[in-house]
Image (cartoon, rainbow, N blue to C red; front, top):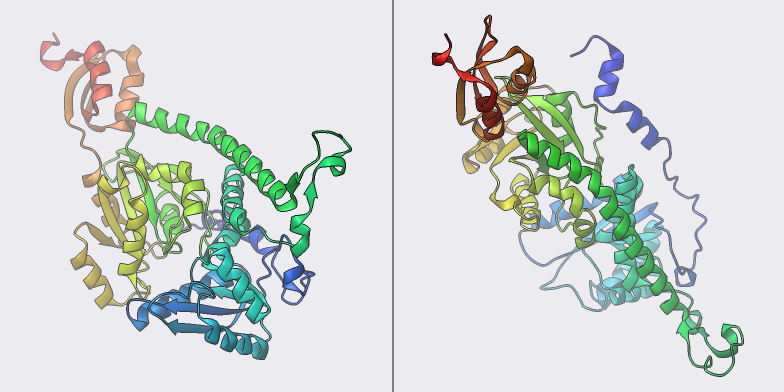
Length: 470
């Protein structure tokens, strides 16, 4: 790698990583009220948790992998996992998610382990959350709330923070709760300021006021996100006008997308062995082995059952995938279920306009830690695939060669004499096209190259065919 330690530090995002790890949750030091029923707006207190999942379909290995992923999510959020339970059911109980009998057993597990939170491996309705809490007597959250909490911790840019807040408010709105009778407090008549006749009446309850404020905040956030996405749209349009091919790195969370971007471009993006370590998209320039310029964008990671609130809030970010010319679909070759990761990501692709029709290269990462049989199985299954290790650099030259073959073709070949005062076109040919030869003569520069249509039109306008040069 590099001899300069400062460059090595920059390439792995150590400064960002150090900043993120400087503030961590400490178990046992929460000041949250102990009686969960007395809390109106509750912070996530992820300290000592018990995981519970309902296995409705698939194999027992699928159920265990799902709970193992929930464990990684919980640990990423800063919690200590004490126990994990799976229940076999045809469908989740509509009242308590796991059924009243199993809920009582879960309460005994919570009491014996000293847990303060139960995390369910699914999205629970407000009624399920409330009834399960009433039985187990500790706070209950679901998978969606856990993922939203991780996003809130990791969001760094102004747009990212706004997107996460919008998703959290969308999740919170139907789940507002508080001090029993407090929610029936009404404002009307003299309570509203003694406005007299016409002002009497039930007015708004406290929960209605809260809902109205949340809706107003959500509307404001949507306007802000729309305004903040304008600059990205402008940059994207500029790249499209110059016809620089765009490559998007997408894939399951913690598959090694940021590491791959760093390996290809030296971008210095934060790298951490944690789920959803990178949220903000990063766009960098790179070149193929033959010198052709392209842009490559790192995107937010996907996960099974990615909350719909996040897909909606991160719509402008995910458009980087839909507007690309080529997708590098990164999958963790060392994961117990890489095929499940591929299927989960392609399910999200289906929600992004145009993403399903784009050419795709499956990049099987972490080859240095993967089983060879798994790698062989994946390469047989996926037609356009390449095995790499972003950590060691193995397979990167083969990946770049495959990108070269998969990018939109340079289908206009020119052999022209370009005047010396139009050196900008020669420079663009080097940046955006494939230069076959350059020869400097008295009248100008003889350029032999393959270029894209827009540059071809400009060259034909100012250049002379080589055979007409006297």
